[in-house]
Image (cartoon, rainbow, N blue to C red; front, side):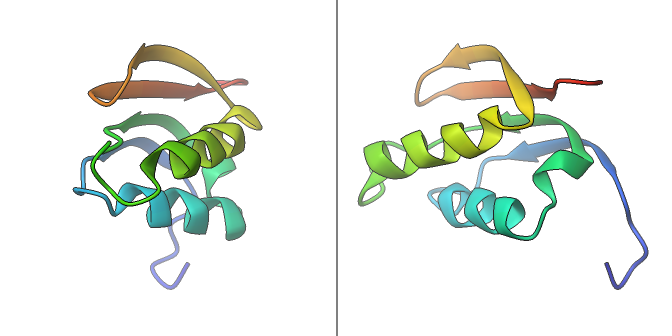
Length: 82
């Protein structure tokens, strides 16, 4: 917001377990609906990974459609109205 950015076309997320907090925060801040495409690698070894991934996927499904899912390797989500 400080930079005046209002939209992100593509976001690639591969941050070794940090993806769970990032997706939570993007959802809380209203940013998920401002991102057209997300490419995410969820990491299975992270504590609570299964539950957190389910929660993140539910949040993503509110505004995005799953285009690709190779569990624990890559997922691609595209905004429904894109």
